[in-house]
Structures are given as C-alpha cells and as structure tokens.
Image (cartoon, rainbow, N blue to C red; front, side, top):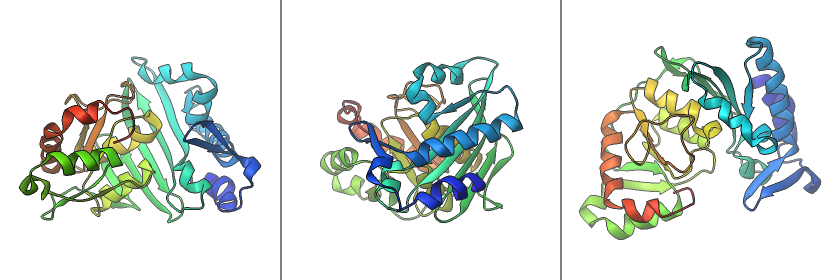
Length: 266
C-alpha cells in the first residue's frame, strides 16, 4: 500500500489538471489517481492470493455486478478503495486514505487503512486485534461529551430534538469526508464514534473490523451487526468500545425517524 501511495497518489496530490478530474455522478468525484492506484493494487493483491477476485470501487463503477462477490458464502475476495476521500484529494485537502480488506465467507477477516499524507497505518486481523503503526489499540470510554463524525442532517436533528441535558452528552460533531481517516481518528481516541447513512463496503469493511478488534463494534440502524454485503442504505453506528456504542445508539433512537428518511450520509 505504501508503495502504491508513493507511486500513484502522492505525486499527483495538488498537481492534477482539470482533465484528470471528472464526476461519475453529481457529487461523486474520480481522478486518474483513483484508477491508477486501484490497478496497481489489484496486480499486487493477485500475487498475494492468486485467484481471489478484487472488488475495487472504480471497477464496480464499470461492472456493478462485481459487488455481488462480497456476499458469496464460503468464498473470498479483496475489497479495495484506492483513494478514499477523493473530493478532498482533488481539492488539495490532506484528508485521504487507502483502504484494503479481505473478506471470507461474507465476513471481513483482515483490514488495512493507510492515512496517506501522514503515513499512519492501521492493521487488523480477525481475532488477533488491531494496531496503529505497530502499537495495539484498545478502545476505552471517554469521560467527556462524545465527539463524533456525522453529517449535517444528523447534527441538526440531534440539536433540534434532544433536550438540552441529553444533548450535553454529545460534543462536537463534524465530517472529514474520508471514512478511512475517520476510523483512524476513532482508534486514536481523538473522536469517539461515527454515524453513517450509506455504507459502501470499500469505505467501511476494514474500519468496522478494526473497531471490533479494539473492543467496540459497528451496527446497522436496525441494531443488526454490520456486514460488508449489507444494503448500502442500512446505516451504520460505530465506536471503539461497547459503552460508547450503546450510548450513541440510545441517542440515535431519540432522533431516529427523521434520519432514516434521509437519503444522504448523516
């Protein structure tokens, strides 16, 4: 991953021409760096596990049926986000990451997240814990009002619906527009939780494994466990410790219906 980032992402950061940036759809940016990094990663992963397919974000754009490989019982596949936070990257903002994970029998068994600008790397193996830059991570509850990554609609609903005393359980809420970096910030303890309306597997499969291995978990809005093959509109609430997760879920239930009506990331 570091070699791919050094070869395909960093040389293009803040040097892209307008012709090297396009929109797949309104609000969804892709650059030549995304495509080049995914191709390089796919070649490298094929050498590691020959015959195991790679489900990359950009490949799925061309062939949506590839995403079905994630849900095949008894089978394995790689899931790759070659440039998480593409809009940030294209705008010259240094919040972007590279995400790779391995799914086997519908469950994530290994995950890697590289914070490209800062060089932070998180690695998780199912049942063996998670480490950031080689240091094991264990989530612990915070004694401050909870800081979270959420979108604007969720912030408005929490502010509008929660009584002041209850709203006081929540501190600053924002979004960095890069799920990979957000998971690393939760693992570091600078942020306590994240809440998403949409859950594309290349954004979340690796990070949710990491939070579970740290002692936390990730659940859908309906309370069921997160799965990489779940519908992308099933929602996600995640934290690195179970106490925080339970607290955020309780607060979410108080503002649940308006948030479920939203079709955007919350």
